[in-house]
Image 1 (tube, rainbow, N blue to C red):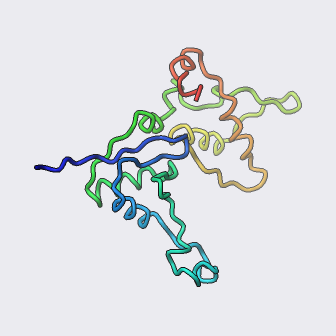
Image 2: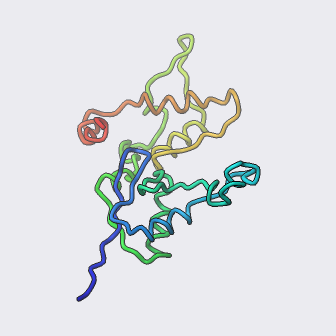
Length: 178
C-alpha cells in the first residue's frame, strides 16, 4: 500500500501573516529551527542561564505554523528545495503577490496621486519618494530609511490618497473591501 503524499498548504491569515497547514510536526520543527536566531547579548539573559540557547532563540515561525508574509519566498524555497516537499497555496496567498503596477497604465507618477497643497502651493513628490511608492506597488511593501525631514510621511501618505479610476475600483473591489 503506497502512502499518499499530502502537500503542505500555505494560507493567508491577514495581509502580513501566513500559516502552514497540513504540515507534519517533524517538518514544522525543522522550519522553526531554520528560521530562528539568537538575539544580541543573549548570553546575559536569565533565560539563557536557566534554559540554554533554546530558551532564548527568536523563532519566526510559530508553533501553530504562522509566519510573517515577508518570509514567504524563503520558506517556500526551503520547503521545496531543501526538504523536497510539495506546496499548495490558497488563492488568497497567490493574490497577495500580484503586482499592483497594472493599476496604472502610464506607470506610477505624480499624476496618480491626489493633490497635496501647502499654503495653496501644490506639493510634488521628490524622485526618491516616487521610487519608494513605486517599489511599494511593485513589491506590495517597502522600507523607507531616510533622514529626518526628507519626506517619509509625505511619500508614505500618498499611498493612502491615490486616485483610482472607477473601472479599477470595480475590478479590485474584493481586495479593497477586505
